[in-house]
Each structure stands twice: as structure tokens, then as C-alpha cells.
Image (cartoon, rainbow, N blue to C red; front, side, top):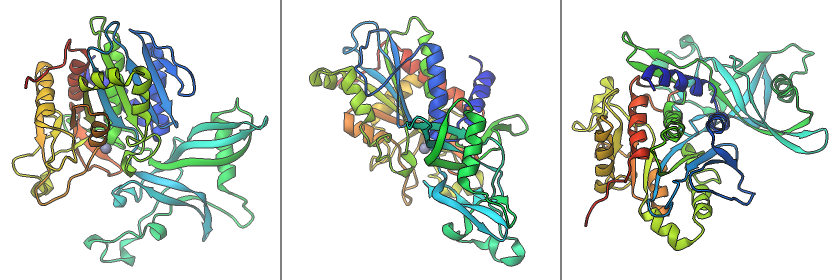
Length: 440
Ligand SMILES: [Zn+2]
């Protein structure tokens, strides 16, 4: 596949995935179209060698796997992991309030966004709504307003002359999006707004009442190329929908490769940005329980997992030209120069010398350069789903990702070659006849 076509598909994925629920729904549709069969955790599974499957948990996490046609246990699994969630503003259960003719929404901060970037943006609303039907059943529906419906206006500089000298944001007082203007006799409320939107998007459903929801504000500006030579990509939620896109695209692409007869698995967890300790998060049981059902015998499973390899994909920090002192001078990843291998002496990243070496061999075979990242010694680094998954399952793991600027801003930036470079490496990982092994 050509890079520009790949990026256009990536833009479409970003634009139609304002929340983890939408990302999972999009990935599921693509996997289904490609021949993956959906399994449900509440059903009995009858897996057959050579077949491909996917599973969704709690609307926000997805796993997909393809089984080799023979010797599933003998050759281990090639596993890729990423996360579907991004920092955001989540709407409170009783969100609607009025002030000076404005109708506003109370929001909580989800994860660790750069809050200053959320002001003066054209925000939309999306997420899942749980309703009752006219027959009394519970129904979960995804909604997405898709157009600018809310904003958080900055305070004019005339009221705060010190605004450019650093301003601590009061999340309760200052982060309250405006949704509408109302008149005295207006009975506008959030429930009626949501009911109207459900009617538009799900006219075939007989909804009786809205019971609850998980709704988020998001920036509805579409993804775009940027730079005189289109060298960059700017978009919301690059962390970590970029890796989800690479993961499910590679799963689909390798299915078309008739010579690729390997065990391949993609896990896209939710809730990484809030610590992963949920049913759909990497500290939950999703991956563990799925592997237990693929390989019910514990000894066989342990043997297979020891011979498996896990690539934990999450965006990495590229060096920022205006803040180069924030990077270790010898570890300065550049955009468009290949995926970044992340290491940390205290194992906040799961990379070891062995897993890093295996990844470098695979990348070299794919003709893709790699870059190394460690945090400055006087600063704490972030983490990913890699260390926990590696510890829980005992699988050799490498933490890698596309170099990014402005991580956790409402608009993040990566190189326009970076998603495709990562995908080429992952394709090689999934299709290589045997995984590289070390002796000793
Ligand atoms: Zn991330």
C-alpha cells in the first residue's frame, strides 16, 4: 500500500474515532469486512487453526487474532499492543447548568491533557449513551454530534494582564464549556439535547429514556498534513490512535498475505491514560483471559507465551526544537526518522537489551531505521501498557512508538512518514517466518 493512501485512511480513522468506543466500532467494522469473525466473551468458543477472530470488551477495548494453520503452540504469538483512549474532558452525569443566559456543561478532566490547548477550540460531543427501549430492554448507543457545538472561551487579556506569565487553571471554575444561549422560558436540558441527537443517528431504535452516558468533548477540526512540503501530520488523539491504526491495518494486510502462516494478535486496551486498572485496561483481565481461552492448557500456554514477543506501541517524544534542553543530548528522536525504541533503567518501559535487539533486527529487515529514547536522568519518564503486560504474561516486550511533538495537547504532531514506517516494521514482525531468537 502506498503511503499517501495509508495516511488518508488514517485521517479517516482519526476523524471517525472521537472516543475509544468509536475507535473500537471502526476497527471492528474493518476487521469484519476483512474476514475476522466476532467472538463474544459470554459464548463458548470453537476456534479453528488458520482462522481470524476479534473480541470487544466494554465497547472501548478490542482484541483481534489470527491463528496459524498448524502448530499454534510451537511458534508463539506475535503480539502488538496499544490503547484506544486519549486525554479529554468528560461530561459529568448532571452536567447542564445556566449562567447569564449561557447553557453550560460541567466536565471532569480525563487523563492528563495540556489544558491550555482546550480553550477557544471548536468542540463537539461524542460517546456512548445507555437507554431503555419501549420494550424495557437496555440499549447502548454511540453518538457523535460531528459539528462544533461547544467551546471554552479564554478570559480576555484585559482582565488578566499576567495571563502570559503562567496561569494555573482552576478546573472546576474555568473549564466549563458553553453549549448554547437560552431565553427565560427555554426548557433546554442535556437529556432533551441527547434525545434529539439519538433520534437523528438511530432513527430505527425505539428509545424510551436515557439512563446514563459516557460522553466526551473533543476537538472537531479534521486531521491535516502540515509544513511546506507536507512533512508533518497534525491531529487530535495521535496518542494513541496512530498505533491502533497501524495495528489493525497490519492485521488486515497480513491476512491477505497467503505466505504468512503465523499466530498474530492485536490488543487495544482502553483507560491507559488513567492508569489501566479497569476491566478494559491493560491491568484488567482481558488479554490474560483471552489467551487462556485460546490455549486452555496452562503448561502449553506458558510454553507458548515464553516463545512469544510483544511490541507495545505508544507514541514517543520527538525532540522539540524550542525545548531541546528537555531531551537527553545523546537521545534526540527526530520526526520522520523511524520508530523510537523507549528504554528506562527503572523499567517504566519494558524494553530490555534482548527485546530491543530483536526489534532492531526486524526493523532493519523491513528497511526502516530506528531511534533510541531515554528520558533525561533528572526527569521522570512516562509509561505504557508494556511493563504491566510483560510482567503479567512473562512475554519479552519492547516499547516503541512514532516520534511525536505536543503529546497530550488537543492537537498533536508527528511526521507524515512516521505512521507508514511503523506499519512496515510491524508487517515484517507479523510475517517473518520465525522470530529472531537469542542463544544463551
Ligand atoms: Zn499513549
